[in-house]
Length: 135
Picture: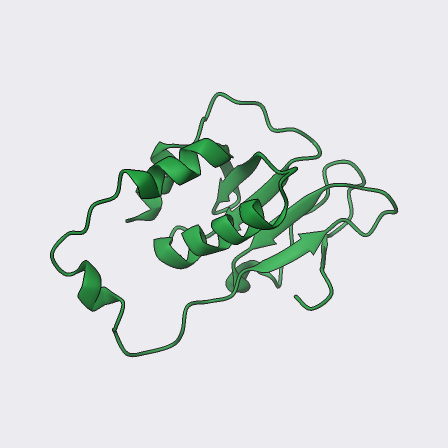
């Protein structure tokens, strides 16, 4: 699984909703931790049916819950997939959940750790998003 596989199922024609959750990645982020974070977000809140996918600061499309689940339903193991799970090194990064600090604003974002230093801006209130409690 690569980030390109995730981008391929995103709908690039869908307009971004101001209240949509946006998911911010770098092109160099690993796909599996990103996929895990997407499942966490979509699984934690049944009211979220889609997220705007942003890579390197550019919106590439909207990823629906159905498209995301389709990625894993269609997945087959390839030679080396099992070995990849046991590679030594740093654990998978924890993506950081952000929200707009303005009262009653529903705008949220999830960012890779490297992007936390420059958080996304709320499109409604034009202020930097802040980390949820407990990050």
